[in-house]
Image 1 (tube, rainbow, N blue to C red):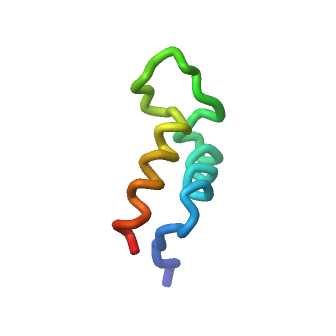
Image 2 (cartoon, rainbow, N blue to C red; image 1 turned 30 degrees about the vertical axis):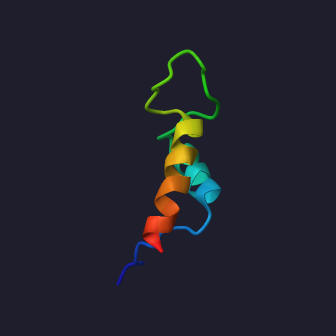
Image 3 (cartoon, rainbow, N blue to C red; image 1 turned 60 degrees about the horizontal axis):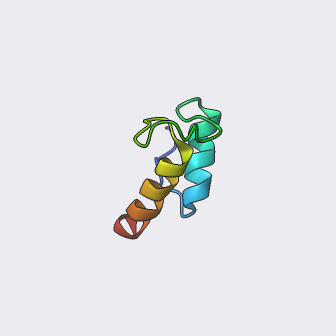
Length: 54
């Protein structure tokens, strides 16, 4: 039996996990407003998704 996937209550923890796994960059490059690997945009998205998850 494996672990069940659970959403983290802390959006910053979610972003840290994505940075460690290599899916996000460590810093925002500020050169492109719609960067796919931007941690700032990922944090905004995680904060927006938090109320829907609970």
